[in-house]
Image 1 (cartoon, one colour):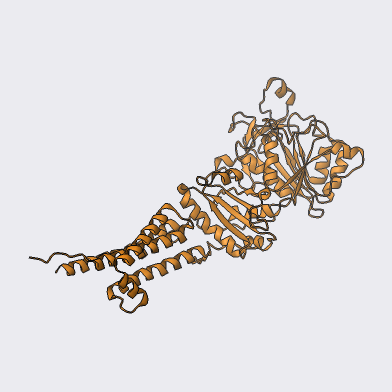
Image 2 (cartoon, helix red, strand yellow):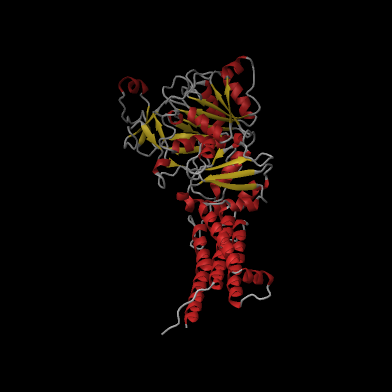
Length: 539
């Protein structure tokens, strides 16, 4: 007959010491890990305090012996040595995990910031905060983004910091940023360490890669540097009109990207021999309703000779900018392009009607950046009742086409019939066969002046700028090229991975690995040891 198991005060005290110290260790690690006293951390700390208290109450002499080290039991010391080792390694892991230590082990340096990004970061003159909003459901996205964001903190020598906010637990902060789950913002930081809310800028994380963040930082640094002037003296589209025929969304996009927007009275400047302001980075003439007079042409020419940028969005009917108008003659003589008295028709319609012309031929340039219908159909552009543009093959300056219609298109020249009956059809010898230029550009290397002409203005309006999205890309790219903003950040084409490789383990997975290695395995070992101890005591 086996001996009965006898549990003494010493046994209970030793068990309480193991549970108490283990729970305190787990609670302390949890507190350090989470950064706040969660309910689980509080429970662990309470269990730890109760366990240590029972240890002291049940076996005060053993507790004193353990603390003084004079008669510590060998088994207890071994157990506490394991717990101490787990605690030290766990704390070291937490420290390293939060210390923003990165190591790119790819041969091509796929996870090291490019020279272009480092150049932008070298120009920082104020501290910047990256603020990301991630709920628990977006932990994987947060860890993916963090792998890139932390590199900005390192390369900027701490001038860029990052902060992650749970919009579910902190809805007031999310509301202040107007943030949704997964949104990322950048902003300047005040001297007291708080976010400068006047500088908060949304980061469009298209590819969730380096390019998105570097461009956003560059836009933030350029805030207030560029000024875009909208002329309103010729009955143009109103930048403040929020109807489907206005261009308020285009204006808001400019402002969101750091451009100042100002009104301009070209007619008044022409009447008073005035000049377009020196700070004008670009001037926009969007669908003028009255003719641009020779006096206005002189004002524009003076501005372009000073290195300015002009964006003309023409349209049908042709009254304001007729093919033989003074302004069109100026464009042809000085810039090698002009707006023709034609309306482009796509015989094989790709838009809603043959008069809705979709970009068919796209030349690679800063103006056509991100417009790639073969990769993303929604990135195409669409013009409604657009005029074609003639490009001089022997121009006085550098010029060319950006977007053209398809070879199946033609330029309808019988505009009277089109206006009265909406009838159109190709007439050999009268109409112009395609492909036809829809967007043209010219630049003068000597003066720095730049001009972009589009045969349509509808693509700028609130009703069409986002449908398709290529309209928005084109409108912003035009301003970026005219102001030379797009040249301030230029990424060379690179071939690399688009997703995180398998060697990039997200923190959640790494935490589980660490938990299993540092907690579960030692815990199982301790339990097996206790089981062996109890079995031997029963013998």
